[in-house]
Length: 328
Image 1 (cartoon, rainbow, N blue to C red):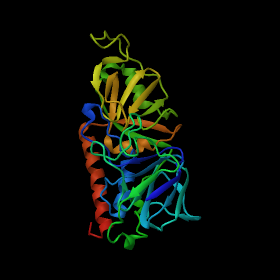
Image 2: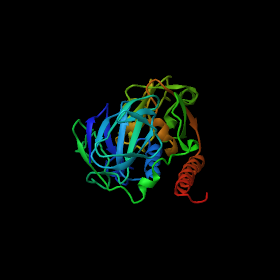
Image 3: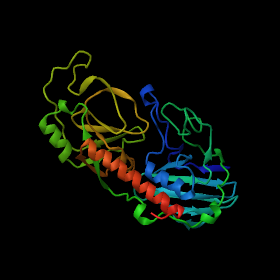
Image 4: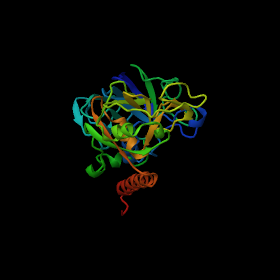
């Protein structure tokens, strides 16, 4: 068991998400930066879907009431076990009574704590992830509060022999103040003027503080629409279309002054013009984009998006083999 002494700014239980229900109005939720989250579980030898904690900007303080092994990944924070600083991206043994504490994120947004055997909470609709907006899943569907006690799985066989094992630096992500995000154009980008498309692709967009697990907001340029006679059911505004399903990563243009990218806890559909969809391998970088950091959007083809996804899967497979001690 672990006890949360201080929750930090926003700490929730997440796993790899609640997949296959988005068409029914249930967003996937799950770890916002899935790459960092998976690396924590892979390092411990856990299945990648085992539940852990996601901390946002300011970390938690946690007392362990069980001897186990942990790994901390994601946005860099100073991490202390009792009063001694410990490394991230490395397996660390904790004893019963030890207190783990985190400072604020130095870059990026979200930091992950994975535990051998995972965190034990009931599944809802096939996942242990928290969906705070509708308050279901994980710990009564809310962020953790001070005093929360959570069950831990039994440490996996042999994990104490893996203490000190770490993720090679070539596999750890960088968390800068400027990122490039690849986008497949569509679904209703035809509703934007040529100048609007150029403004979207040629602008360095600034991440708004009004960003969270539901969506990331950007400001930076004016995007103009084409003159268009709205079809029946679309409403009268230039930013409106007849309601469509939104994929995760879609970039909506609700007005000429901002764009909004939907993320893991997003609504599933609506009637705003969509200029494109960020490719799934780049969503981890979006979720780690801090307010006032900048983003450029790069148009790619569907084939290029599929290639990028396969390359990321191959990278994770190579790392798995490396951590298992198998030849790569």
